[in-house]
Image (cartoon, rainbow, N blue to C red; front, side, top):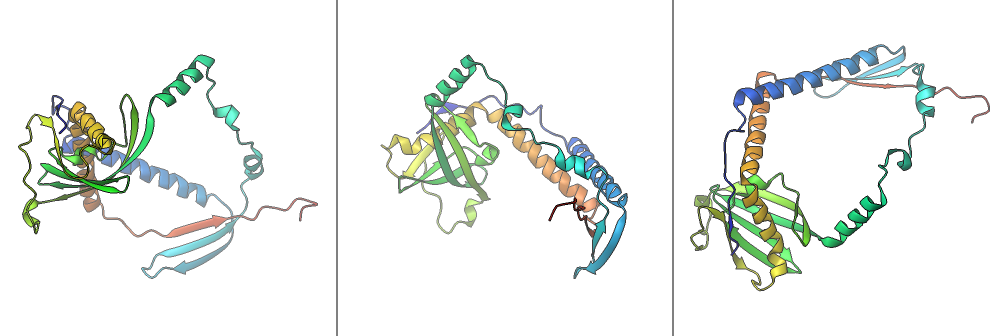
Length: 260
């Protein structure tokens, strides 16, 4: 059983609904401005021919042949910088340090299937070397949705999660009898799999250690994401999406003399 003290949690950085609404409104305004600018650019083109069709929902599909832009040759002829032009120049000491770091940790991929019951107990399922493992933890994995990588002194774990939420009262069979988890720290109980295979549980233990050490920031990040999601829903309800036509513009490059 893993036991690591929780980090102190503060709610001062929680996002208020008004702040979330302002962020979403600004995002939508910026997106609308970009769309308007792009439509303005399309309208500046000289149209040679135009065809119109309709989708089943009534929206137009407008296909236009336009004259090539004046600067099309320059833009097509512009060389694309090679890797040597964009890659940073590293010193010999920096390269040696990077190579040394890559040798310190082994890279492991951990795929976890998780169900959080009552926002208090998380069931975690995974497979290691063909053997199935099942554990229960008092860590709420909803706070780990944004975590992709955790590094320890010896390993680097890349995580792929499937995280769902449920209520224990809906289960056909009750949750197994679990130890009394500490209210102050992250703990887990392994109920299926070889407990002596430390490599099989290393990924879960690294993840829970990360959870405990960063719980305050994880909660804040989760709350802010939830606040923005709720604000986006409020915005969409107040501003129903209007059907938009599709516009496709193309031009035929002029053939140079001698070209086929």
